[in-house]
Length: 169
Image (cartoon, rainbow, N blue to C red; front, side, top):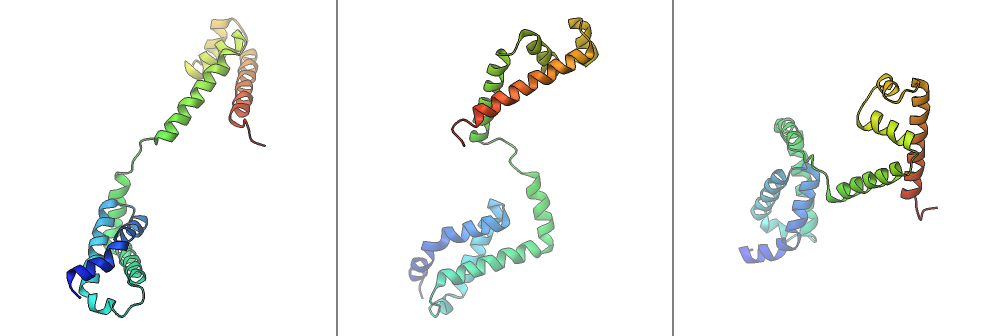
């Protein structure tokens, strides 16, 4: 089997080898290495591939086994540590949009609260004042503030639930 025949057989599932390796190894770099190793092994065993009904199945089995061996190896412990250090902590665009939308709705619902509840919610949850400080500022008892805060939070929670469950049964 020459190189062009080999490429003709392997090309249709080369990306699949990478995806399987990526799923098992997590790291793109490790998946690329695995793909290269598997393709090299396939090249070495190209004469045997003629006898297989499904070279793709043979390649997928080889990929799976190579990746599992890699994960079991001593280097895998280092691999896990290294790749945990490089996790992507940025938010996805979808998640950012949802968070911004939720914040917008919280602001809208806060504006609909009575002035007293709005002020208490602002001082406690946003400005991080203690109950005794709020009591001094508003000339109210701490228990009155706790009740008003609880009612404000409950009102916003209910309104947000209605907003987010709109159209569902």
